[in-house]
Length: 582
Image (cartoon, rainbow, N blue to C red; front, side, top):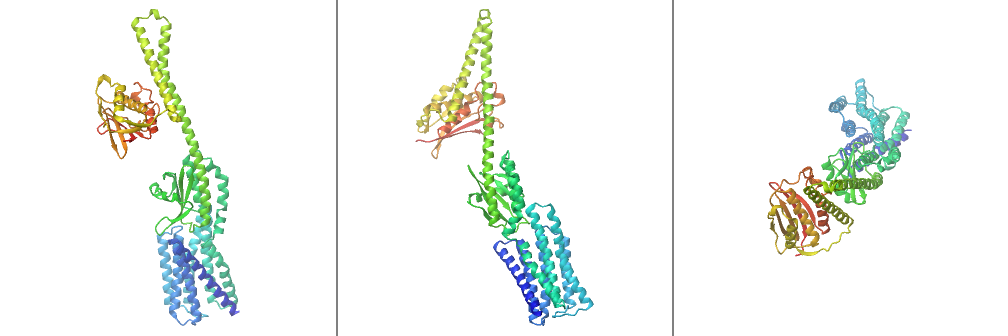
């Protein structure tokens, strides 16, 4: 029977050494303070058992082995308490009390000289100290056992299971160590066999709970996967991008037990984030260029994270989940799960984008029709009013009134004709059916023609500064239309002074139409080039509200740009940039 006891003790020792070696290997692969505490705690437990075996082999001749064994035994308790602290923080006063109690019983065990023999005999005081040693060690670890189990009740599925297994693992450590101590200090070989068998039986469970394998992590997610399938429609059919991203991030975090993460759009802007600042999140957009999920170190010496590209029709976004206190491992299984989730997010984002674009187009079309009807109604009402007045008795009206009415009909008719012509131009440009002949043209003559067409009020001069050598790629007639629109706006809304100047930089000709008026109000600038966009104080002035929209579309058809810039000291600058052909 003594042989059976020896074999069981050796198996228990081998199991402890194996568990500590696996924990050390995990720490070496993916360093972090959580894995460090776990590896160090298990290593001390294994070392204490090795020292006990050495004591047996050397017939307990070396007192230093007992002192070192006691220190490693108590030190393992504090390291495992700090391992628990990395999951659920331990109050500072409790850590201080635990350290003081462990040091106190350790010193007492050394001072009272606990017997260090194969079959020790204890005095009353030594028995008391031995029990105090085991009780303090167990109390330090039983507190996390209870607290982790209680804390798990309010956590999502993956975190809840992880905490419960950690609670069980702490209980197993306590029970295993008690069994080993009792087996080595007991007089009855039968009880030693039972207690060593008990410790050996629970060692595999200890490994599984502390360092869960992939198959167990898949079991954890089973509940979350089932719920995700039932609620996937919330993601797939989310009405807005923000709602979709927030919901998708929540499920990504729940699937792997993460405590933080974020989703970036194809331009690197934050759609949703949790426990991370937006500026910090946007700094990781570089990971969207990866083809597959990537594990990286989110914090120096700290947490890990998984970055998964979200493939969309217009580009790549990014999903990142960050390991929390309940997520020690990120393996290939978690990466595959998040890749599948990111694929669904990509399809859903494309759908939402398409839906939002269609909604905006419908709103734009409705607003466009309403504005067009409003613009046509005013001149049409004037024409109909004068026509009815004339029909009621033209021969009875004073000659001056008749002339004024006819002039108003002509004026409003021309206004309607211009509006309809502008609407046709705009629709043809948007459909890409506008007839153009883009070729190299000299800019100076075109500007002179436009200044003449715009008819400056009161014959006031326009300052023109255009070099004769500036050649641009454009349609001559359409460029004249653009400049005429810009000059007419400057005369209508600007101050007394209007200037046109141009220069060439790096193959681009920059043409500026400037005035010294009040400039464009800030609230109107974002919508300045939209159809029928006019300031409130400009509603009574002539114009269809389509000129700038048509001008920008024409310039873009040339391959250039049209933009607005406020002038220094007041006024407006409309900047046309065209490709140089000179």
